[in-house]
Image: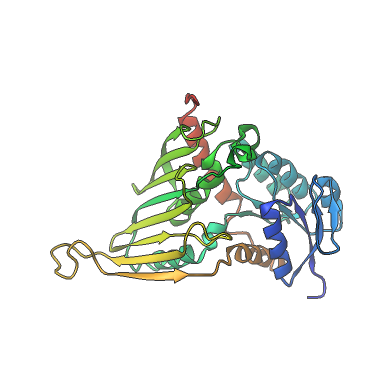
Length: 338
């Protein structure tokens, strides 16, 4: 490609570095500048800019927004107002008002493409499970259950993610939002949301445990336990279907701390079947390569180059998941943090 799309990365923390690698891996992209208020060392000869407006006003086509939650709407909206394409990490701000503001700016900037970083959709175990669900091999989904959490760590207390003024919430909006997005991805249309929040483990002014129960307009159920006090990194999602079940546990990550990613496929067999005895045979598929970060960026670039509508991980998806998060926090508006 003669004319590569020029990119800026705003915020060069953990996610900014990942997006840097994604840009380098995509043959249609070139990194023009990185914006961060800190002094950062970049190996290659790439401009480092401190003011995000200067970064966006430079000769770029795409802005990768990798900043704390409170800064997201300001930077995304400014980028869209200048006609830039925007890839924004989750969550889409601190609250429902933030994503609603972003959608207003998106509508005004008709030619700009906007996508959000819900990369869990593109993990190999999830993609294989989605294929099986969509092909109706085991019938319709009856219910979904998920657990997603981490161990915290000695520096966890210092993280901005536990400062409600910056983050908007605790473990639910930080990590649980990924699982809620997967619930929407597989089922969606949840019209009943009930939640209980707690903070007995870390005693922050945000939740460190969240129990969520959902029901959609077809009477199908979902349940999530999101926690920063599992004392180990954990990811598990169970999909119960009419004729069987799927379980994804473990999650490919940089550190490998969530365990090896695998998909268990089971077929419904009753105890009256001698071959089952309440424990039907299962097929287990293991996955060892995580391309989720690259897959979502490659899809985003495809939307831009082919002038297609962004039909996944888009602003509607971001709005739908934030509606659930908002309902959870409203459900606990009188909760007193210890």
